Image 1: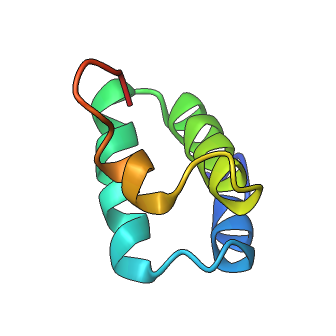
Image 2 (image 1 turned 60 degrees about the horizontal axis):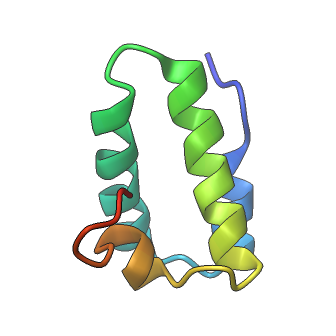
Length: 68
């Protein structure tokens, strides 16, 4: 079941498929058993990238001492 259409936002944000897969892996670590929360946080990350709040590289490789 799909809860949120994060893939549409990812495309609009020009997130390459390989980077989206890495972002999905990272977000899934935080929500291994909760698909709704996984999709919600992935959608929020894609929107933040789309809006220029964070770069895809910073989302995938956060600076030391910060939580992704």
